[in-house]
Image (cartoon, rainbow, N blue to C red; front, side, top):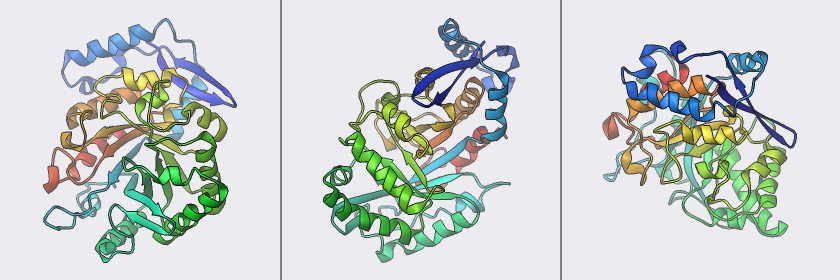
Length: 349
């Protein structure tokens, strides 16, 4: 069967494939002893078989040899309802032989008024966050990249950054000061409100100008945004990728809350079939069914899906989980176990 991958060159989106691999090449453990996995895989391959064209083996080999899928976890709930701090250190101390995650995204930053910035409901300088900042430094010391998340479900931050140049400066300068003070390795732009294409480009350009090429900029669209459907952000993501794709490290794509699903391969494949690079599409899921309305995938099933996605789409971008504090199967008592199980599939252990 053919394996659909993609590349972007200038303003042209193109799709290609890697051929000459068969279902028999898949290890038995990938199917988990369940014939439904094999049937689903055959269905996907049959659906796309007539659309696939030959793809040079050199490019496929380049992707496979140079790209390591990411394991990204969001962290928004920092304390339990009874005020017990939720530590991130078990992600390191409980690791068997390697750090489980590649990136941690701290949520959520809100721009309330000029100079009035909150991390969730408090200023980032609040004493409540002291242990959090200390642990984030530890994660960074062992190689985990830490990003801040701007926006999310609470609207207003991006509308305030989408006004006149003078208004932009009023809100952007304090934001950049916070990013610098907190030592973030990047900023995740979760635009869940109307924003213009020129507005998001202005923000990206300014961040790159102020923090340099190594500063990571990611976006968090719902899955339909990369499938040509309706979404939450206002601007066109394909147009953004054409105009500023080199500045966007990757997309944390939300396959949940009725915007998509990772229970099969068609949702992710539909994005790649639109011409998106698999390396830039990180598949986002809920880590616990209570973290959203739809989109949780049982951890073992998710691990098997990830293994298959890596075979189907060379250069697979990785997995993102929302969010850390109650991740299954360990739940609130052992939330790091999700990263342990899914991380093995992402890394191919």
